[in-house]
Length: 390
Ligand SMILES: Cc1cc2nc3c(=O)[nH]c(=O)nc-3n(C[C@H](O)[C@H](O)[C@H](O)COP(=O)(O)OP(=O)(O)OC[C@H]3O[C@@H](n4cnc5c(N)ncnc54)[C@H](O)[C@@H]3O)c2cc1C
Image (cartoon, rainbow, N blue to C red):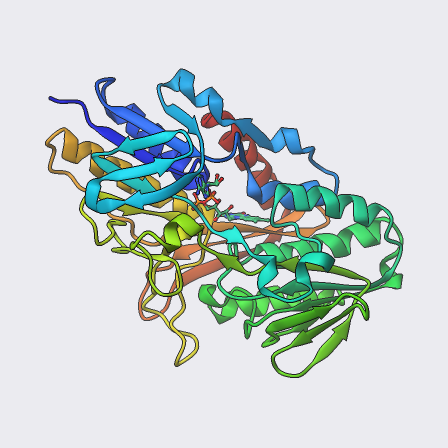
């Protein structure tokens, strides 16, 4: 059998799983080439722990170069052109002709999309941002804290709420809680809408119990750095002393101009196989757009959330099907929409939501009340992830 070349773009959650599973399933005559512009893989679920000083950045980062010893050809370069017509990817380290392509380039942060945001806001949505926020929190002893979800879609629907709950806990630990007015602003109607009203109501209750203000249907339009004021599409304004934002997201430029993307810049895929409109080109994880059958707003189709758990499971399916196709096997797998997530609530506790996000007529997601066991499970998962793939 002639050796095939499978190029995986992106060494984040999805690309990491896809390249490992392909390597495991295919003989050494087949090349697995993983391209990432970063030198390190970082474990994003721990960014909130970095924010609070509970993790050092190096503890949640791993060198992508380590993958070479596993037989994965890691290329540290930016991909700047995807040419599916010629089965070619152009990168800063040269061109790669592929037999199969997996696009797992994620979503990037675009704070410049909101005037005033990039100069003013802190964010736990990047490793660097979490470190800067950690240092800013050390010098913060009270005032107005606004946690703002700037725009939809954004990755990890639970993370902004976890951020608010953990900040509240940290302020309490430091004895400054009574000096802090903590509020969450979001364009959503309820937290985590795709998980359904039961989960949203439960999360809102956690905020209420801790005295965290919740302001739904507030879409950020601008930030006034001088006045320290945020303005929303509905005409409301709010002051802040510390602004903690989930910046607007967009797909990487190479994807937007590739011909693979829809008008919004995300890649539409077959929601069960992750096939794109181009032969032997797959996309998975945050860079994709998948509409769900369940709807919570009559006119707004809710997409599958952007989350590592989906990138992970989708990557397994894609790797299995590519390997099976190459080896002439017939068994194909499908991604069925299953997902889970931890939501840390402070005081050493976490809740746990899980279910089928492709459930009809609505996603069938259940939510376990916060407890110490789920928090412990989250710590174990972090350890497993960073040991298993490196
Ligand atoms: C604070 C926070 C907490 C989170 N918590 C959870 C959680 O508890 N559970 C969960 O399921 N998800 C969580 N997520 C979401 C999760 O991290 C993402 O959904 C997941 O990483 C998506 O995987 P991906 O492979 O699609 O993209 P990514 O992991 O973002 O990987 C994309 C990769 O592509 C690379 N890249 C981009 N453009 C280029 C280019 N042009 N050339 C070369 N390389 C490029 C990037 O460097 C990156 O390594 C969290 C996210 C955040 C920010």
